[in-house]
Image: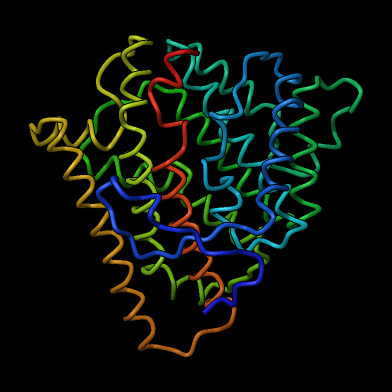
Length: 332
């Protein structure tokens, strides 16, 4: 097991009323105040760079019990926590920018604007003349350089994946089956990239054999996180979908399974809730199976525990963050 150095346990009573009783550990970084302070400053920098004057930090990457970085990577080395906090804040605000426009064309323009300044090759950064870059480009490049400095060049793969996610989110997604949607959500929706980001920030290195060994243990966590996010964000996404008069149904697991199986909204929510619980059970079963095939390397132990912490932290975040409250977006 991972030896906890930088975090404290979170009281799970905060989840009362959600209908869930998850068993994943939920912890928050001892330096959560630092993560929040860095995010507050980043909000000002991002607002100035994008010329958005009405940004609300309460709709960013935080909840009453902690910042996203503090909850998802509670055992992050303190010197890397500020970078993780800024990066998560950046991704949350960029996600909001993609949700705001009504048409696919407008969203595609935003997506290209985001992606253009997020080169996936380190050499491309220095191919630009710093003085000719806009404030927005400078902000993006600064984040990328800081990530490489703090976590190594491996962080570039996560940045490239985020750029691809922006492109996907800009499209008017067509209805698929639930299984197709879930596969797409996990692979393209950023959940694999999230745990890779956790791995890089934690300084964990896995060889190919170790990655293969933990794959069946980690995949249910991808599903758990993707469906948890969809479950708690459904009402907000439905509200935004209707306000923007987008075609078709909400691109969310709840709406898709309701359409596919002719369910009411409440029935669909319950079904997704059951699938979240099943994903957690599957993870535990696969973990027990892996234990029978030991021994594990220290990095495998750290990685599995870091992913479990990320799953628990993300669940708490999505269940309690103001981002998921419809009224908060109604005023925007």
